[in-house]
Image (cartoon, rainbow, N blue to C red; front, side, top):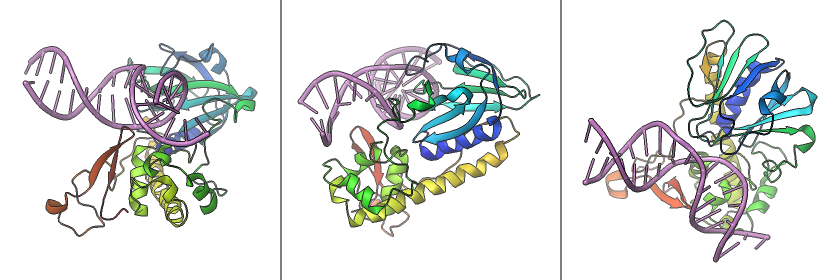
Length: 282
DNA sequence: CTTTGGGCCTGGACGC
DNA sequence: TGCGTCCAGGCCCAAA
């Protein structure tokens, strides 16, 4: 369930370990996840130096020399594990899809049991035209995203606000969990049509989105401290959610009796679970 | 044009 | 115990 905060955490962890390093001994296992890896994938990564590691929406972008960019999506279950130099070689796992060493002797593996991840290689010039990047909306923390532009992107939409926030063209990086959390914090019903959120409610929703993401990134960052130097999995951190996956539990903002009200409700919108409190969200 | 829904993939939870 | 069924999730694409 990696969404923006988890992807950000993984990207920061990888940056700590890999920036400035050269990739050596790159190998793939079966060479496909949701889609086949690009042609000569391992060969093209071999010997490249890591210049910088960034995140765009839920994608990790590893910028290499020769203007090559390694694009990674973690899907649902994608994980990186970094084994520092001189640490024991990890056991083989059938779901290890990519492995490589760095020129300082670390060993890195990408593991994805459900294979919903994506690997691709692109040239720097394709950063805004690549199929998976071209239509992405603004980053939630982009200062250019203000109340007016956010409101304008919701205006006229006939889809529920829950679905609109999952649409990466509206705002990039939110997934099913943080959409529920942000709508709860903003006190907005997930069933409300996006068009009716434009205006005053949008000015409540945008800070709520930022608060929820910021708190989760901070929680992730605190796990990174322990990981550097240890043989660690990147991006998995304990985070407690207020409404997500808490059907029937008490809403922290309500003093109502759960036995009477049923507590936090679950509903399905566009095939996906939404969790909310009908009393706090209108 | 916009919005909806199916398919991809597989481990784990659940029911019989 | 062992089997089958369903679900979760992000994203693309076809269909309405």
